[in-house]
Length: 133
Image (tube, rainbow, N blue to C red):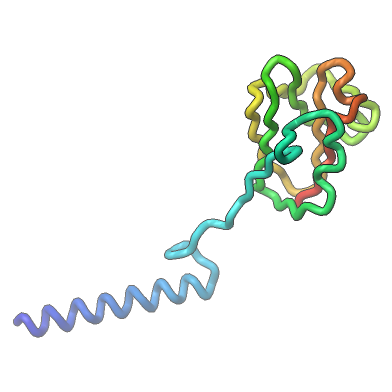
């Protein structure tokens, strides 16, 4: 009887291994890590600051990556805007404004535009345009 039980366990282990490897081949969930997302600190060590416009250049952003806007609370903020608002440094009334100084914003596929809406900040270069694939 013990031998039959041992054989059954062996068969179950083999079947489980086959299922796991099949899922991996198909890109399925069992045993697979979720796609990695990156946390990008905007402006690197300088943080969300004046002249940060060139920071996104040549960075391989992916949809789902997260931008970390780090700044001293009360001095700046972060607002996602349209391309026209970005170009003109204008912000509409009904927008989300991040103000914590440690703001994490996930990226959607395509272009995203961010500015600080504190008077004078955007005009002094506190704005970025990011393209995520």
